Length: 416
Image (cartoon, rainbow, N blue to C red; front, side, top):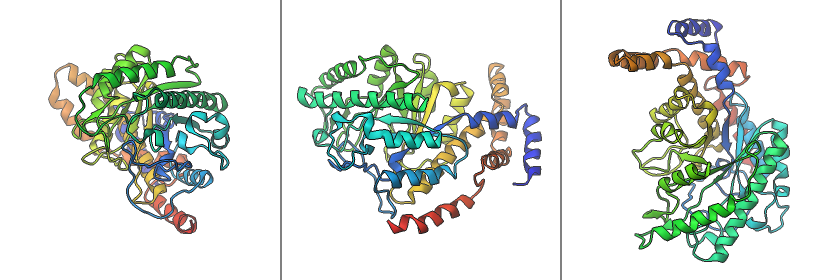
């Protein structure tokens, strides 16, 4: 990048009271949790059940899918080299390394994730974690923690408890608190006769799982809702209202997934609402097309609006940002890079906006000036600041990163 471009951008932003250096430094301190399941289409290393059990579906057959943990980690390292800043990795329990031995999910321990922990320590990144309540014979009928059979429910309670312990070990080992997020697929395909009982059962299960207190400096509990899924089109036990109430009452993080609401319902407006009553929020940033289809996030209006709410609301320290999409129709490494860089670009645009001045206009009833300044912000030279940020982090600023991914595809992915 031409340094003159950045200097000119500095001056332009200074004219509206914005320090580009402050924006760059703030952006550098915002980690985004990159989800491992984009690299292998949510397959994991277990192969014990149908992937679609639980409303999960990755579509497409692009070559180069990771087949084991070493390949997956190498793919993630390749992506991280093209993404500015230091970030995190989000793991599911099905990515355990069991040495070829059959270990059921309620028997998992930190021993099965030491490879991930050692790798993360080398990379100097944190890890977030998720119990896996889908793609398992005991989830085949669509119910897990809300199951009416106590034996099945016991299995999943033990699995969730084991995962909290694994997450605690991640926090201890890496020195960074691990967010452990509970999402279950439980629900009905058709109209239920009894909506209440499964929710009461789920409440009991969660209470038992969370009964053991764990230092929040090591592990943070989160609960995630969903509107509907494949096979649960009419009723999902863990609705937004259920988990919002549970999180408020029990001081848990609430996970807001941008694909888990009505197609026209976005989550940026929910942040300031829920953060009035809970301390912290987890975001799973996705892009639904007509439904919760988990497309790679683009730099679109909903993403920009979400980033603005995080930044302008003063929520950076209270919002944990993770990505959640799985597209098997394109190069999987490229999908990570596109999504991660877009999340950062949206945050940078928000950091470069004159939020204080905009709020002043609003409080004074000067709505014409508020709208006019908002529109002017869209054509400010934020891209020059992005390029400077990338250059300082030693990653390609523009489209040249695509060539690096395509070389990796030829040299590595297509040989699998």
